[in-house]
Image (cartoon, rainbow, N blue to C red; front, side):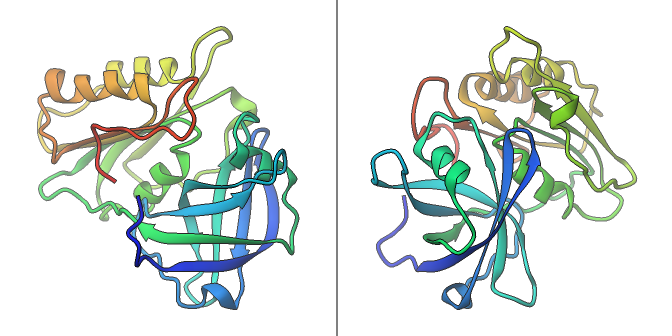
Amino acid sequence: MFRARRTRYTATVEAVTPIAPRMTRITLGGPGMSAFRCDEPTQWVKLFVTDPLDGRTVGRAYTVRHQSPSEPRMDIDVVLHGKGPAARWAEAVLPGQEVSFGGPKGSFRPVPGADFYLLAGDESAQPAVLTIAENLPPGTRGAIYLEVTGPEAEIPVPRRAGLDVIWVHREAGRFKGEALRDAVLKAAVPQQGVAAWAAGESGAVREIRRHLTENLGLDRQHAYAKGYWKLDEADHRDPLASD
């Protein structure tokens, strides 16, 4: 939850760009966010939008995918799952409309002594995973597991030497997160110098967290796992992970 004194900004929707069949990139900008700064991986904002179904204002957390270093502008990638008020807003929003947001909050910092990173996420965590991958120290090795519906949902990802990107396709009839969980549980990692970061559906992430700590022997400093959402639950908050 945001503290009472946390700054709220007003922004204009500058562009709405589909980047996958069920994901759209919303570019926000304007003088109302000229003082906004977001320069660390996984930082997020709480976006306050109007539900087109009933006119209510709701707040939802979204990772900042990019922020312009020279202009008041940022990109937020939104999954169009079609069930929640924020997804309905993202499907209907047009350039020129205004929104407000608070933040940023949260950040990722490399773990001292780690030279191999196991990163994993579904569509909801894809922006955060990619901000981490793009900001790891030079020479870092790792494996990045990204669950999507199928090949059509894969997006272009900048490649870095030593970082392998593995797209995990969700088979028909399986719950979201199960394919990601299975892939992570089978992932080969070094015996030392490992750090992990995973997020996505709460149930799947809970099993990934258990694998990281019990099977791989990682302590909490080296194993971050957070449920970003939960099946059949709106605005889920994971009680086992910090922001």
